[in-house]
Image (cartoon, rainbow, N blue to C red):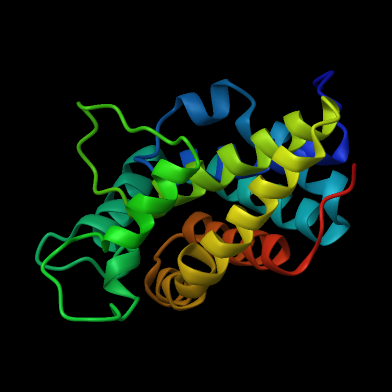
Length: 211
């Protein structure tokens, strides 16, 4: 058992960060680092329902061999011919006008506003689901930090940016994306990940943090 016991705001940011990691290529380190036990504890701090989802996710990872997970990951998110659940916001959102940009400039503007920088060597597109979840993590983290410091103005600014981001981007496409993952996944792990991610993002869009 782990000594990990976060308060609710910290659990919220930690769960978001771990969900982001789960949308990268699966690796044996997931289980070695007690990733899913920490996820379960963080999820339980928010809702018993989320905690149960996280428990099932960890069980599904432990029950499946890594090679099968890698094959399912590739089918869903990489191809070979066409991904069955494209992990990019631009695949699910209709742009406000015809554009050749991918992703739409608006999400990059929000990243800039939130002080979110991407490593020059990072090979994925900026509207990948893992990246958008990482940006949401940063917004939650900065908001919590501002509240702890008593900087209500900065906390409010991060709250407003989070609301815009969820309304215009991640929250607007997470439902069809996770539905596609759940419908096409061959493994329980990705079906459980889809449901937990959908519920978590939905919760962020409809509830206020506790401080």
